[in-house]
Image (cartoon, rainbow, N blue to C red; front, side, top):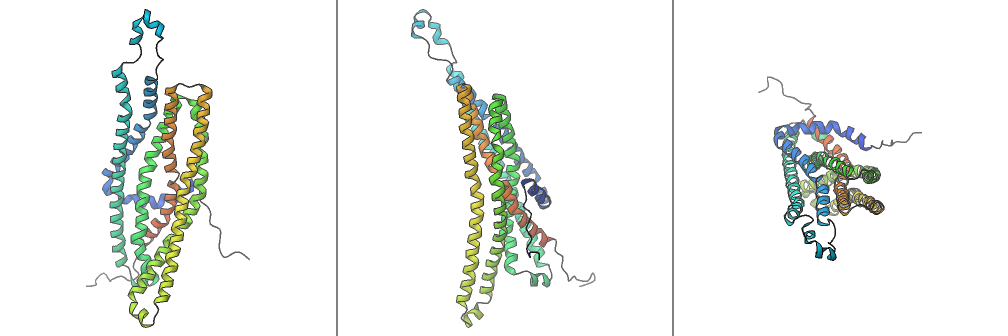
Amino acid sequence: MSRGKTTKKRLSFWQTLKAASGPYRRLYSYVRPYKGRFILGLLLGFAYGGVNSLLPLATARVTSTIFHGAAPNPMALRSNLGVLDTGPKVNSIVLICLAIPAIMALRSLCSYGNTYCMQWVSNKVVTDLRAQLFNKMVRLSMDFFNRMRSGLLISRITNETRVVQMALTAVSSDIFKQPVTIVGAIGVLLLMDWKFTVITLILFPTCLLPLRYYGRRARKAMRGQFEGMGEMVVTMQETFAGIRVIKSFAREAHQEKAFKRSNQLQFSQMMRIIRAMEATGPLVEIIAAIGVGLALLYVYAANLSAGRFFGLITGIFILYDPIKTLSKIQIVMQNSIAATTSIFSVLDSEPTVRDAPDAI
């Protein structure tokens, strides 16, 4: 005898991208009215990635300049005072050292502009989506409201659109900005020392292991969180709407238990999501720390110069943040698929009762 419940297929990262392509393609159609600011945000994200990749080169140059050479031999000063004129000039050192603050300032400006533009566009899209969703609901037939509980409809407009807004911001910003940073940093590291770069990249695929595991848990918890929030809103709506009946039959304790149950379920589901989201960061940090340790061993064995050493270490730390950020993209996308699908299912609904064409 077969089981009543079938085992759901677990989605990999690429399967998640494929599953999200349909809802996201339709969601991005709402971006078209604001495509100017959206494109500006993308360009600033690309600029952020390009400027970020210059930091290892600047660090290597500054370090090599500061630690250039050694102190002159005191005995040589007696016969040749020109030794004091060797090495970089003070003006050159100042200009080179200013390169790092200049790059960091430009990097911060690009990051701010990218985040602001993407947040502005995503909030405008959600504002339009909420208005369209509300207008659609009030024009549907009564059989739709008989099937759907009012709390679930309220959750569609409030909670699920909020998830869509967060996903739209994260995916639009990070899925373009962070890969440019990674490619640029890897290119600079290959230019500086290809052997070191190959050793570093060997550990990167291991970052996907916690991503796959916790991504599945987050997707399941997010689905339960949507349902739990809807149940809690339904309980409140029914309680406040029928408060006279509840008080007449002394049913306050029963409603309190119902709300407590749905509220506790909401808390449990939310904590499951938080555990899944936040566990990936520390695991990626541990893997990155192992990579740094191996990199230091390589630097010691290869007897690298101070400039190249600091440049390579800077490149590693530049790679860390985008890898950590992208490790959460799959979880964000999985969480938003359910919300986006449910929203568009309402928008695609048609009223079963229509007015006649000649109705007054």
